[in-house]
Length: 167
Image 1 (cartoon, rainbow, N blue to C red):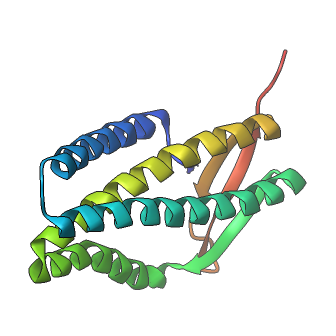
Image 2 (image 1 turned 60 degrees about the vertical axis):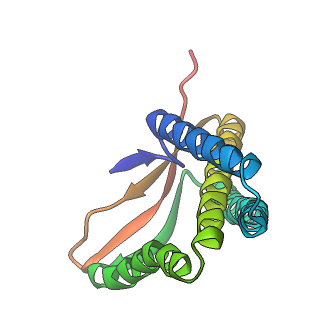
């Protein structure tokens, strides 16, 4: 199964819309509140999350591109199907953590959540532009793939570059 990396154009439009809405809400609350806790948590969480996610994505993409320049395929991992519980626990922690912060301080929690939403959204859009520039350099499109589990019980995930044919 081939999936466009980092996401498709419809995924880009959804991210732009979500980022735009969360940014509008954040700016509205930022300029219409006098709560210093909210203002500080938003102004710290937004750039911190943007820098964290963009550095993480850019380094990952650079490693992928350097491998794809050597070969048209890069296998990122080889796993058995039993390791999904670790992934499930990480996702559950990411979902539950904001609500735990809101229990202690709703104002700070809201600022942190909105700041992370905005920072993550802007980093995803920036990463998409970075990948499209790298695709021009590779003269192809980058796709993420997951193979079916083979007879050994492992499935492979990785990246493949599909070269564009020029007439």
